[in-house]
Amino acid sequence: MKTGFKVCMAAVAVVACMAASAGADDFFKQVATTAPFEMMGESVPAMVDTSVTWVSPDCVYNRTSQAITIARFDLGVIYTLDPSARTYTEIPMEAMTDFSEMLSQIAGEDEEFARALEEYKKTGSAEILEEARAELEDDPEMAEMLEGVLQMLIGFGDSSHPAVTAVVTPTDEYRNFGPWKARKYFATMTMPMMDGIESEIWATEDFGVNYDRFMKTCYGMAASWPGFSEAMEEFRKVKGMAVYSTVNMSVFGAQMEVTSELIEHMQTTPPKGIYEIPDGFTKVSLGAFGSDF
Image 1 (cartoon, rainbow, N blue to C red):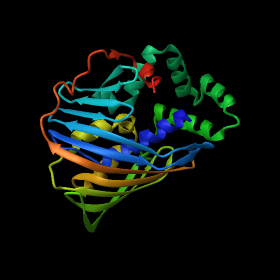
Image 2 (spheres, helix red, strand yellow):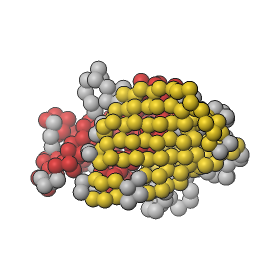
Image 3 (cartoon, rainbow, N blue to C red):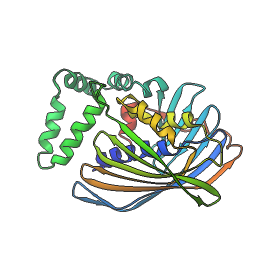
């Protein structure tokens, strides 16, 4: 259940990032509300999460209730921090667009993972996977998800069959959200392990934006999926910053709805050291960091 929810939230984050680019030296506060849903026989209650984002010409800082992400374009690295464990990991930006490099880094730190990865690449299976499947024989949804995650880790093979697609349709409908005049867009998207991603996006051009900076912070694993760059290009049809959006999707039969709303924007000087690793945080490997959540 925990793994499944993380996959869902990662997917929602990617879609939300596509709909909400940010401008230089700007501060944004957003509220995301996830409606209650059922997943793998368990009920997940409604959740509300407030995130803040700071953007400078060379850096992006984003904080949610679970993690902090700091993108340093001047240094070519992305830091992901776990405030509860006071740990962080450092990922070269090149690895964010070449996931195989990230996997190699994890494999270099974890012998068991390295063996399983090599075995899966050669045979399409692995002993650790078969053991997990045996344990999940009464939970076919979880077994399917495990397989899907491994497929994402290894890659999708023939890039002529995109793993990610998107279609964005601008409308001529406008309305105000607070002080901002926004235009309505519809977006449909396909991604691994998800069906029928549909979004309604209201975006404003009332303040400047820096699309590429914020998008690169959100890429993560998805940047290496076939079709992702084309999907992002399609999302350029959304002009400006999303002030309100809804995302509906099906993940292994779980129907999810997430609503995001921009509640504050201003241009101001960020807090001193906001783009630095705070004192008292310990650097850990990528594999160890994932186990903290």
